[in-house]
Every structure is written in C-alpha cells, then in structure tokens.
Image (cartoon, rainbow, N blue to C red; front, side, top):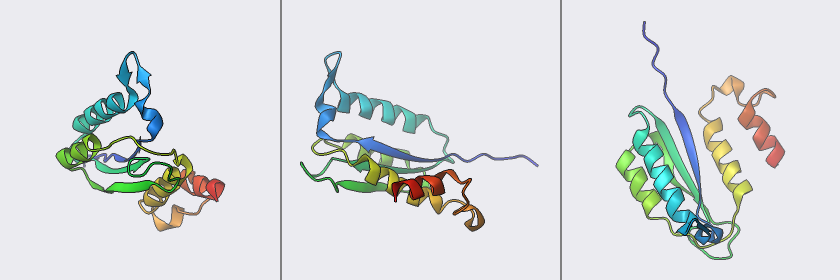
Length: 129
C-alpha cells in the first residue's frame, strides 16, 4: 500500500501599512505577493490550504483579520487571485491572526489530540489566552 502525504497549510499574510516599506527599492507588499503566489503555484494539487490576512481592509483597526480562503482543498487560481487583490492599509494584529489560524488547524486534528499538552496548536491557544 502506498502512503499519500497531504500538506495542510494555513498562510497568514501581513497586509499592514508597514508593508509599503521598501527593500532594495521594491515595496514589501509586492515582494510578499510574489513569494506567496510562487509558493501556492508550487504546492501539490492535493494540498489543503487556507489563507488569513490582516491589515488589508481598514486603517487603524486592530481587529482587521479575515479568513480569505477557508482551509480546504487547494484552489490555486482562486488563492492567487485573493493574494494579488490584497492592499496594505492598517495595523498588525498578529496575535489575533495566529489565534484564528490555531483554531482552524486545531479542528484538523483528531478529537483525542486537540487538548493534549503535547499538542502544538493546543499549546498556542492556551498561551494566547
């Protein structure tokens, strides 16, 4: 019997205002979009992928976190289109983004492992309170 590995990935995209900063004359938001687009296009077709972005809708809003692609079978062109449509605007609610990501990934674990102390995402959720 062959073993089939499935990648489960939840990307978090920083679309905060600081992403307009430059690296070698190029905006960080442009670089991030190029890199993430390349990663998505290189993923295996059987990957399970989700996308969360923050700072992309409202300036000055520490709650601006949105799940753009629900964790599920990879739809490459849909995911790339959502990435390319992001515009850097606001704050950096990274802990809120990580909490949402941990919640989404936690539900991918068998129920018996979700709240075990050795479980990485369970630990993250406890630390974030």
